[in-house]
Image 1 (cartoon, rainbow, N blue to C red):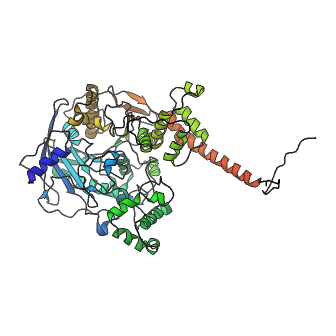
Image 2: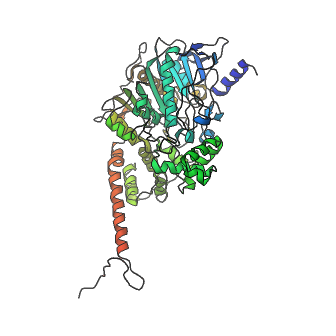
Image 3: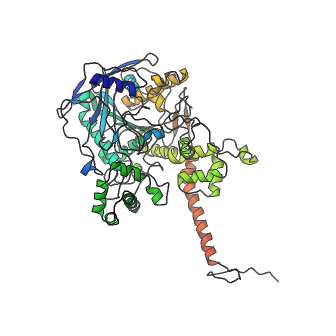
Length: 601
């Protein structure tokens, strides 16, 4: 198969939803170190949007030394000068991860290995001088994903907004986030990979016609949390001006934060599972050597067994931690200190985020789960890792129930809605609002939700509602791609045009209401989110504004912690009292004090 046939096959296979072409004339770019990159020409056309874009695209550019051999579990090193000219025509290999297709995610390069630190640059042919730059950080729970995935639609966004788009891979799972909680395996390697990619952009984007002082970073899910972490990390200062967080913040309760003894215990348990000797496990240098010599497949296969080995099947997968380098302090502390990077933020959470967590429990995309009174506490306890007290469950039902009459007559025994909404608020909504509230003291913050239920749900869960990631098809123009074009309504396409313009305005001006030069769209006002006015833009066809979950988030942030503490204290007092008042079957007192009730004469 010749070069042209290979690339035509590549485009046909992966660009399922666009018209794309490669010509014999390759676009070229000379990096700051003198390396010449050769890319491909691509096109995207939509008469409905309408937009007609041509691009010089550069795929699979190595930005770091391969993190293999002695560099496994080490911070990334900038890539040495590449062989020139370098053919940047194929999406780079994806990072080590479990099979992403089991989660409904398809990578554009399905080869997975440790040598995976590549980035991609998509450059519209007619961008203005010193163009704006949009850097997207992929999601996947810090466990799966890649910069180029079939579900994401960056050519449409690049064509519409006429900005340069950058995507990249970063190390995932144990390779990116395993830590001993000290210098042995420092952790946050995946976030340091991201930071190095941003530094590469800062150094080289001018060669593509971009302005390093006009960079917006954005992310979805774990990518969104990552964007939030970059607003906190000292090493990311000056690398971007705007930040977009779509369903994830650095203070979310789902984000793992492995520390001290727990971190070391995880590493030693993993070492045991992959066959390291007891002597190796107890000696730090030997422990590291054993992990360095283990195969990548063995590490990947056994990391998921750590929780079971520890007797905790829900033990979180490796994730970001306070390492003293990338993240010098607890994320909440940094947010409260108001020493943040960037100037303008969009922070979003969809209306039905919690359905994703229920799907992880029920694993049926077609049938809506029934969650009765008996099952509700178990489900909440499964995700929160502690079965809530019965009084807490009753309060959750009271707070989240739609029709109060259902509480009185007691006939309804299906609490699917209440469970989904509470989990959404616990894991994402309330922490994102807290982050937005605190950062609004010094930054321009715009908050959004999406209550509109799409025709096509991102993960094809029929009962997901406005689920996790469902806004992506609108804000990035996916509804104008061939895959969704005939499966979405005219109303959804108009909604996408508006969402695309909000995002384009923000990338170019830092304000979703203010259009860049040459843009003349008129949109409903998107007010700033502040402590005094916690207002959201609701991504619906009419783009209305609304207030979201203030009562519920006050309960979760302020009432619930105090209530749980009081209930635990009460339980401890009862236990202590029972211990002091033990009686045998024969009536003998074994406790410190026993009270005998006597009849009054």
